[in-house]
Image 1 (tube, one colour):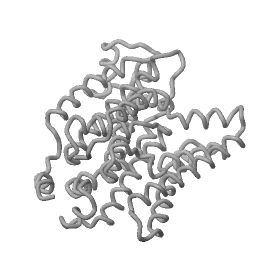
Image 2 (tube, helix red, strand yellow):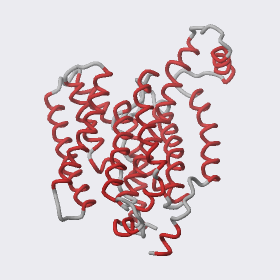
Image 3 (cartoon, one colour):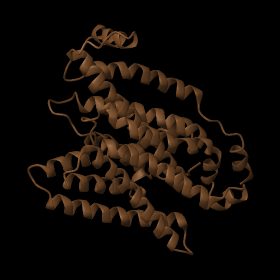
Image 4 (cartoon, one colour):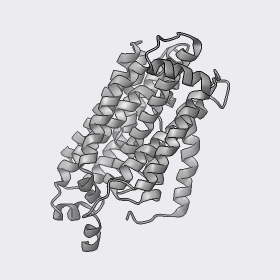
Length: 346
């Protein structure tokens, strides 16, 4: 224990090399994503409308200006936000449960958000109300899981949280299926199905306004408490020996990760596998130390989601839902992890 505790006594916030490489890749990928799409544009056209906006020239109102500022830039911003947030949440859950095969879905966040959004669509509510119900549904499910875990005494708290999350998630999934059966098959059911598969097709700048502050609010405590969160990976007894209030810290991490996940699921729908795959790749790059892992996972998740979303709107005549692409990439990766066999957390 002494050697492991000593290794955590001087936490590094990030691996500078990995962060620099990912930042460069993002700087290259963002302009490419702006240019690529059903409406092709040249670099000169994009630079022209961007220069006009920066220098205060009145907006042209032409097609290029509309596509860049009303469609692609908000969508790129959403992809960066969703990917980074889901990767951060996955990193927190994997550190918290000391298991690299855990994802943000483990406590029922995505299932609850999906139920809230489906209920909003079923009631024919406006888009803002649907997003609000998705956010509330995600938080409500995790609150229910936490309540069940608090009521069960004398057992491993982590195991109780996982089992309660599985049960609550299954119940939310069953309720979602019931609403799909009752929904109008010509109007509501297609909208429900498309939302549950995840998409950024309808994202606008106004959609990012409520999600961004919530994600920042959830990330800030994780950054400030990165050393204490790292200690949780040693186990509860070791963490207590190092002066960490395990129960309170675990509750805080779950709250922050849930807030982050629910915020982006509310605007993008259910996008699976990101919170599982990206933290594991980041851990392979910079190791398990949470201080190094979190920023690398956020940047890698943002880059990954930007690439996936660009593929979703360009590989076919009709847009491919994000959930299909992330599953097509994540499932083989998961099988590869299983083939490697179980390895120790550290």
